[in-house]
Length: 152
Image 1 (cartoon, one colour):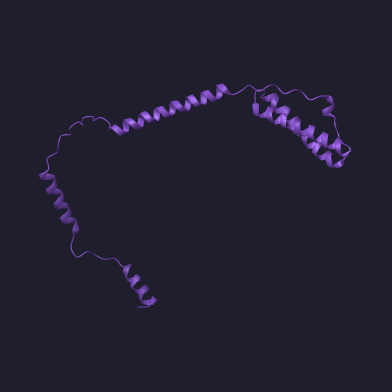
Image 2 (cartoon, one colour; image 1 turned 45 degrees about the vertical axis):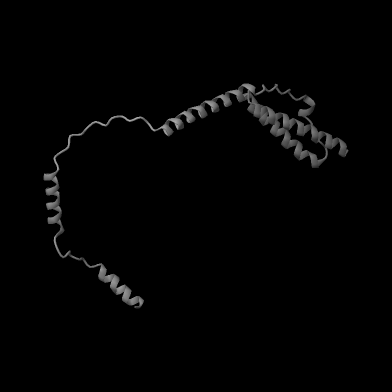
């Protein structure tokens, strides 16, 4: 059998096909017989049955896990140290501009980052993340000054 014969057979399958006998008459007869033999049963209320033991254990374990999570978060927040306020930079550090062009670009970037962090701290003064970033930026500025001083 080649491809052309398969295609011809597929085209023949597209034609409508009538069943050999009428199926609806037998379906209707079966439905009527079933309706006559079965009397409508009165719905009986279901008795509530207790939940299986494993469901109660899972529910208890879920509640215990939730309480442990809440206690852990509370403990973590309670133990978190309060960040010390970051000291304001001196006037000398604000206007420092190295003469060496290798350090000048880094100094400008660090100064811009410090100023942006200070503006962000004005909006959220209690943010420990911003305070850490500002402290790290000021440390980098100090290291850059030391490098520039060592380079001469």
